[in-house]
Image (cartoon, rainbow, N blue to C red; front, top):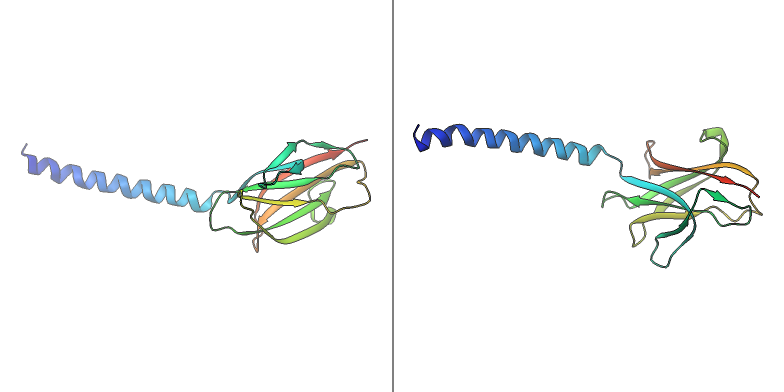
Length: 143
C-alpha cells in the first residue's frame, strides 16, 4: 500500500474516534452531578473547608453542611434540612441562594435552635432553581 492510501484510511478513523470521545466526555461532564461530596461536620475552617466531619452530634453541637462544587459555573445552591427521613413533609427549613466559598464548597450551618432533639436528620443540596438533588448527608443527634 502506498503512504497516501494508508493516510486515507487512518485519518477518518482518527477523526471518528476523536468525535466519539468528545461527545462522550462532553455528555458525561454536563450530566454528572454538579455538587458532590456532601458532609456534615462540627466546624468549618477559615478557608471554608469542613473540619471534624462526623455523623453523630450532641444536642449542643453546631451542625455544618458542606458540599463540593463540581462545575465552575455553579455559583448558587439551595440547601434543605430535614428532621427524620428526607421527605417534603419533614422539612425543617430551606436555605436559598447559598453561594460557593473560596474553597469551592457550598456551606451552611443548621440554624441556631435551642438545642436539637435526639433523632435522625438529613440535609440535601440542589443547584439553585433546579429540582434534582445533587447530594445529601444523614446524621444523628444523640445525648
